[in-house]
Length: 249
Length: 183
Image (cartoon, rainbow over all chains, first blue to last red; front, side, top):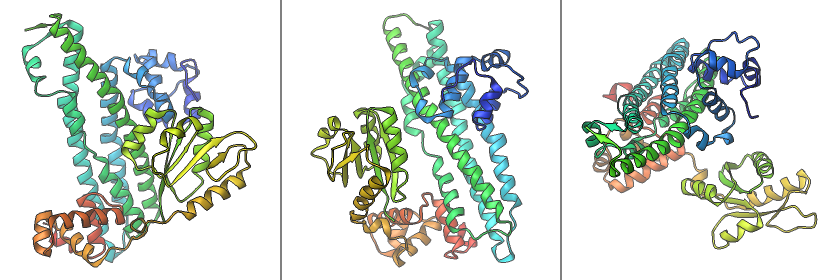
């Protein structure tokens, strides 16, 4: 169902409780009373249209409307993506680590817990590297590009660096950190002997599947919104430079 | 079990989604994609092999030359009948019977079904798990690098594990290597 800004925030959560995690990423607290989505967004200084785009694309895969999302400010999108990273690192990963930690194995299977812990740690490190590269290199580049276009001024360093690094480089190096997650699920489902507390595996798997869905949604925004938007911005930048509309100092 | 990917190309949103949920009922189908137009259809075909195509008259002509295991034309005329026709006015049991028969008649491809690792694959797996490079494995087992790569592809396919760390973990669980041998 399509969500609009006059729907009550409480109603939205009854419709699909999975949006709770998204709401957290916008730093919105519960206790909405009868407030509509628009009112809650305004109280929290969030652009309601942007919030709706994210919620609708999260709710319904088919909704995903690039044109709408691309119309939003890059800073809004980057803010959301960064908060999502934070959510994985400070919430999701520790939860899964705790569940692995709580597993109990019989004596002859006792190495399995260590194996799972090592494997998850490797995955986490790879993920952190990926996030760091985005936040330290790619997002600042996008912010600078946005500023240059808006202020019609660019610093010479930025202009020179653009010859070496553009969003197309990012597209190429945007590798799949999700392969490890896929392996982890399969190893638990197909190959690992059960722990003494069998429910432990179920809880871990459910978390892993949810994390995977969430990551897919996240990369959909990166690939279908950020990349095309920045490609357009780069084009606009080069056109403006050629027409001497941007001052390079 | 064989896994065939299915693509539904149909402009009407409601019919398309209805067909998707219908085709999801077949457990031996793999991925099910739906496309509104040719552009979306091509996007899927660039990424995945499509075995079964379901489409309308207007689109199916564009695929005349192409090789699908099964092709269905969507019809909504009570009288339309035929082995390649999917009449959406037919009752569910008739449709299920028609499609199940067609799918069963497809030759199951061997590589998809075989899940057991061969002795050779096990020895390659052990070397991969120990962190050896393709070149090192080739030298050790007296085979070409190209053969090592083929073995690795088959191992990944059979086990459903893609990364080296995943394969290492598999090898330890199955006592193919000792955790000590890791570093």
